Length: 480
Image: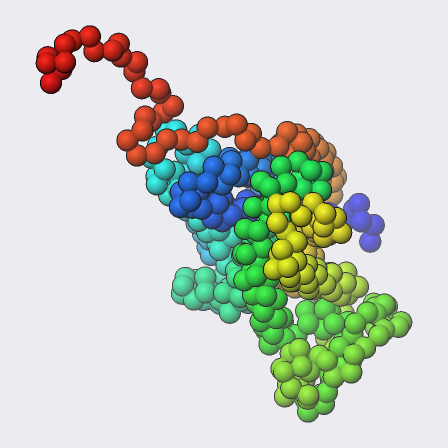
């Protein structure tokens, strides 16, 4: 069927566009919010003015991402009612409620305290400002929790049943805490944090490489390295747990992720496909390179499988994912970036231990700084490819095993969907250009290291200098 006359295909493209573009912005705000809490806490603990200047500088990039995220997220919400009305009607009692929680609990919390975080430095006590920053970061990550709960429910629906084509909730907590929820949230939590840390590290490395405030930005690089010692390995571990869940709950997705066409029976070792060229029409891989027995260890940590790995041929073509090549390589790109991040973190920590990251020596580590600069956008790519695996691998189901995507789109004229798709593409190009322009201005200008810090304790508040009094001219006896 011609793509331009296929309403479902156009609606899917439009949703993919809005999801991929919108995802770029909250990824940074959710992770950077935690970094701002850390850096402001260090300032209050040490009274080191550099940490205060870091908090003020990085918060500019935070608010830029927050603004673009809000603007790009609105079309996503409206799409459910416009392009996916049958879906909204079928699952709205749960899905709509959870998205409502995200807006009223998480987004409103983040937005309410954002103003204090940005403009309250000299207007509220330092502890109140820190609490505001904590609440902003908490709100951003609470938003991630609700969105991942809703999306995880699409992967493993629970807490009710479909009755006459409509999902009837029987246990809200059971639906929220569906089998995919915990690992999915943790995987995304660490993904946003890791991406943000590498963005901050990449920008810091750019300043160091260009001999702009190397001592100042070596501090931010060391702070994120300290965090990455914990975050990078945990992200790999949680990612492995998520893949194990796919093995148990979504066998069609696993088969697409591995381009596995034939079933591997239980009791046999399973080879892992390192690289391949899937051929959907021929239902085979035209060529591939395998690591013998590796998939058995990846899935069950055993030389032979206790459960079979079903191949794609076990299902009719209409009941399995079609974009096998996209799913296969998206998964490998995500995994490769995660491993690269862990390796870069390890090498950087070793260089730090050797004293090579000292303020006077760090600029000489050109190869290392270049690696950090090039790593800055990779986290975004890992997040986007991960979501491609998650959502495209779920097809042909919008609610896995229950509701088909083809039955969930609104019956709209293809021309109307195409018109809105072109309009959103144009809008997002403008927003992306604006984000690059203003973001580059913030980075080129750099931090204001002359900015005075708010005063503490009994010192004057609000930047008001103490009143100047004339010297006491009374005799010493009277003064006493």
